[in-house]
Image (cartoon, rainbow, N blue to C red):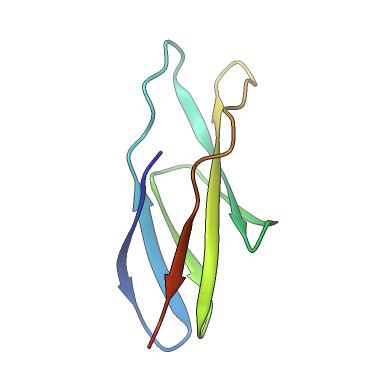
Amino acid sequence: TAITVDSSTATTIDISWTSPSSSNSIDGYFIFQENSYVGFASTESYTLTSSVYVSVNIITLDNKGNTSGISEGIYITKT
């Protein structure tokens, strides 16, 4: 799951990603910021709260309760 930055403000970062291929439908995504769980997204986008920098990882949840391995993270630096 490759994470991309769509936009940012002084206090938020909008990210998105492509849904991984799966034989089961996807129920959502667990979002981790700085290795801590921060929320759940039912679509392929999420708004993080951060003013300077952040590392982000995602775990996918399918409709059978299975989870993927943690995604390759990205480190976002705001200037």
